[in-house]
Length: 350
Ligand code: TXA
Ligand code: MG
Image 1 (cartoon, rainbow, N blue to C red):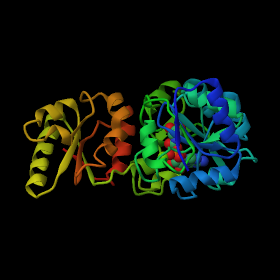
Image 2 (image 1 turned 60 degrees about the vertical axis):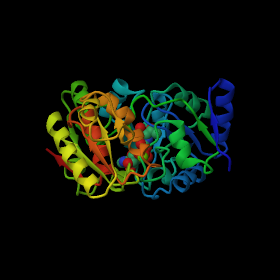
Image 3 (image 1 turned 90 degrees about the vertical axis):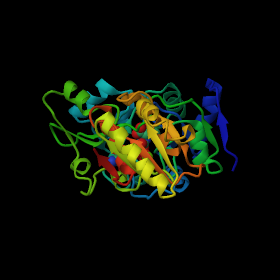
Image 4 (image 1 turned 180 degrees about the horizontal axis):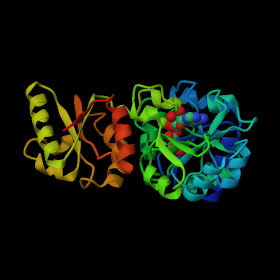
């Protein structure tokens, strides 16, 4: 199958793509977080093709993408008050809310669960596509299962060429990490199943009387996670990754020592780090083995290039990756959650 990349995107283009979705085909599309691999969310056979194209385990449910808040009532049997409040405050935006599913949502979408993840993306192309299709669009991130999520059409193409007919190219995704997933099915409680750009701090400010907490599986990584997808290998680069966190100068010193040690052992490590760290190690690390994530402490810059960084050395003769992490506050919580998974837990606190 040839994979077409389509850009720019007129209304007539979107009608053609919407017809593809309605006919049961898969289409990759941009959102403000990462690219999604979309199918008609009411068509079980079309959704089955998503699992096949990604090589995704079938017990890992899909998110349904909606064009506006009214559509939430078409896919959920109920929208509890806390969920409604969060959707009003943060949607369209990088927030997925777990809701009790409506009876007509196919089991393959929810992995057999009684709940469904619902998200209204803050991206013009995504919402115009959903509206034109006239159905909720089921979409996981458009990567091969286990690989870093794609934030450009080229990254989607690298994983999905030959497997899907079309990629809508909307340029680089603005945020770069997947949506915050929250479960509000318990009264008075908002449980964060996956941290994202809608931070715990932002939800606490919006809901001062609710108990907004991280899922136990996020704090104790060995407990069985409640978002089924969180238990699989995720975001993994082709070579082993180790992440260093702590005060800037200490991290730089630790990276210098480790880079020297690995090079002396005959390895070919590469460095993913802040501008400051890369400058401080420029006497040691060749420029082509560095990926610059912007100013130290700029979490938005780091989030938006994180997955590109994790794929950057794929075709180079690099044998391992060393990365500078972020403080786990605000958006840094989401960044460190992804780096923990990408590194298989190899996080070194200095
Ligand atoms: O930003 C995003 O959320 C992107 C874009 C494309 O919208 N999508 C995305 O989808 O990240 P995916 O499939 O890669 O991750 C969805 C996560 C999985 O970990 C899945 O297990 C969890 O959401 N999930 C989906 N439905 C759920 C449910 N009913 N209960 C608990 N977790 C659920
Ligand atoms: Mg994913």
